[in-house]
Length: 241
Image (cartoon, rainbow, N blue to C red; front, side, top):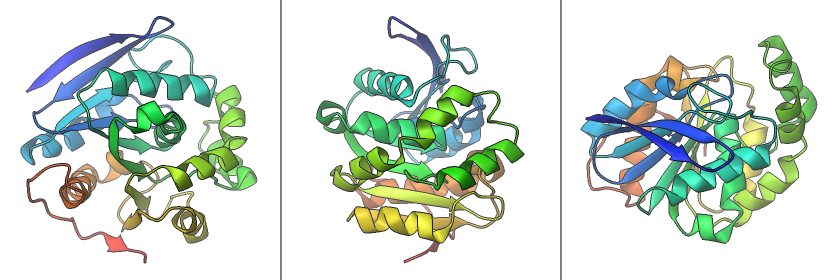
C-alpha cells in the first residue's frame, strides 16, 4: 500500500510517499535525486514488515524551496521525524545521510530515533577529493552553495556521529564510490556502535544500482537492532571489520 503525503514546514512544503506498515523507516535521497529512487527499496521493506516514508528533499522533485545549506536540510529532517510515530530509523544516501546526522545533533530529535543508516557517505570526506568527485559527476555547479556548506561541516558532523547514542550502519558502495576505507575507519574510531557492509555491485548511488540488496541489508540490520521482528536476509554484504 502506497500513500502520498504532504508536510508543511512553513518555509517549505515537502511531498512524500508512505509504503507498507510496521516500524517506521525514513528514507532520505541523495542530492540531485528524488523520492522515487526509493520505490524498489520501499517495496522490499514493506514485504519484510516495515513502513517506509520517503520525502523529496527541499528543492528536489515535488517539494518546494531551495537546497542551499545543510542546516536547512537538517531542520527539514527534524520536521519529518516529528511528523512520524517514534521511534524512527533514518536511512540517508549521500547528502541525505549528512542531513540526518546534522538533525541528530538536537537531543530532542535523537530521542525519537532508534538507528541511522548511512548509504555510501560518512561525515568528513576530504573536501578536495569530494569536490573533485562532485565536479566529475556534474553536481558542484547545480548545488554550489550547498556543496561549500557541506564540505565545511565535516568536523562538526563527525563529532555528532561520535556522541549520538544510536547504532549506525554504513553501506559502502563498490567501484565508483567516493569513499575510502580510511574515511569509514575514522567514523568507526569515533563511534562505538558502527557496523560496515560493502555492496561491491553498486557505485555511490546504491539505492539505484542495487535496491534489493540494499533493502535486504537494511531489513536484516533493523531486525538485529530490535526495530522489528521480521527475519530478513543480509544480502551477502561484506563486513569490513
